[in-house]
Length: 392
Image (cartoon, rainbow, N blue to C red; front, side, top):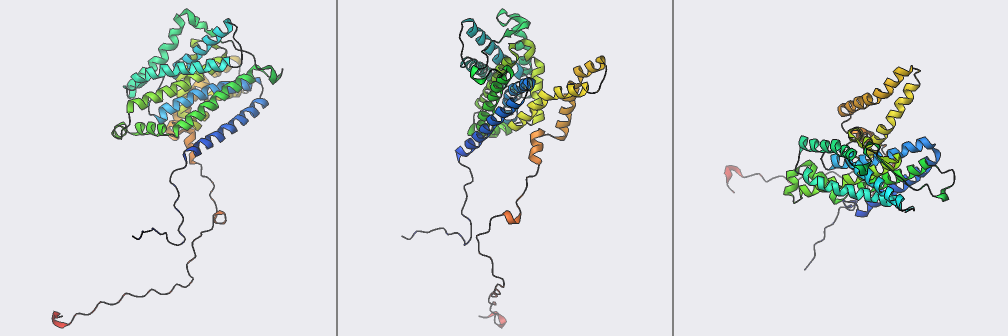
């Protein structure tokens, strides 16, 4: 029996696989992680102590905002209480560090273990809360998370173990002696915080590009269609809330480490709204937008303070501007972004046209060129003329 082979026309290119290999995304993200580590080492060595302290605060915000943008932008759920989830991670780290210090347990592994425990504890709480959140939609889900953000930090003020409004002090070991005597505490905090942020971005980037991320986007776009396709909508939403809570817990633990205390005032409703503002400004569902939005909310207040100090106003006017100008600027910026940039700063970056290759940079076409003077086409034969009278 003869076999039939499919032949390609001369000069036709070989078919290219429509999907990249599964490990190509991982290698790409590993390359970004390596570049991020190098950048962190360089900039923390150049900056002074105050700038490194701001970088440490930025790292905590990036962890929480990245988790929130995955929940809101990728999964389609909303949370107005992520500050409370950060409080769980922060208080867990503070209590564990206090217990380690009381029992004389020291070492470089102590703080990472506390951060891991805070992340796991917040993830478990998020999974339990996600079971209830998966049954809620729209304003009901927003109201439930808002109640969480208001109630949970306030509860800590009424229990002795949390030290009331004063909060729990976070003891930790100084930087390793091998880093030198001039290696400051703020430098060490920036390393820990930005390292946690890089790990969070790396894991969430791989999650978004995996099958789990595609399932989250399918549920976000159309829950009925996703359910008909065989996806468990509730399980996917619970998983998204769990992962987002874990990122918030890590950010809260880092935040408590940077502030060296965990108190109700550090994790109030204002923090939850600030995180949501960073997500909107940066762009929903974009990890790049999470970084950009975190930079805006962390540094905008400092930039405005420096600007008002340079105006030479009297003390009363300067204090009023310091108290009210950042909040007014946040509100104005949110309105402008929602009206003019629905995709946030990340969407604005995607609109920037990339340079295109010119004709000289394009690869040569392997197909043969057509002849300069092609031969004339042969006309088809004329149809026979029927005999008169219609007889054959």
